[in-house]
Amino acid sequence: MVKTIYLAGGCFWGTERVFQLLNGVTDTTVGYANGHTENPTYKEVCTDTTGFRETVKVDYDDSLVSLETVLKAYFLCIDPTITNRQGNDIGSQYQTGVYYIDDESKATAEKVFEKKREEYPVFCVELEPLKNFYDAEEYHQDYLIKNPNGYCHITKVEFEEVKALNSK
Image (cartoon, rainbow, N blue to C red; front, side, top):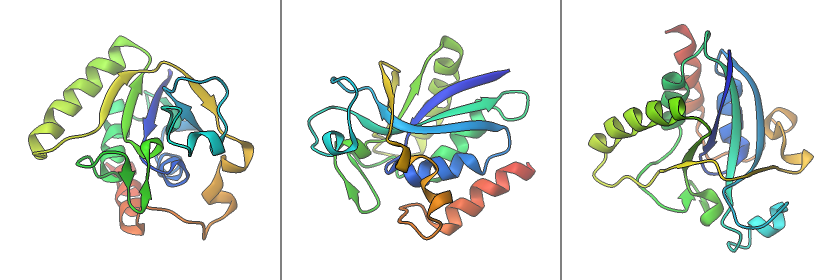
């Protein structure tokens, strides 16, 4: 059965590419989540006034990959100890977060978060219900597939660690 989770991991270009490498992920869409305006543009989100996070909608087949594994890949590629920043990207749109749409996903994420909080003395990842999501402009979709040498805050090592999850 295909399920959906929304993951904000800094710049959505690299975050989307991470999940495209994970077996069982059936689709990804980059966009803007949990802000307080309607139909935001990238330019508006970058003003730090809309409350939106750059987010990836991740559709996955739970018979092929568990939400636990999806979240494991997510945590391989973020720094959960900082607020409003990942890599060189700074601003509220880069805040990390997991946004769920059902109670089962919430319960699974809460268990993962409980373990992660034990690993880090400071833990800044949001865990909230999805309030809203707007697709980003087309040029942002599949950005690193279209631009393989494009900017990404996620390292090649982290991409390889995510690929390795496929063999487990």
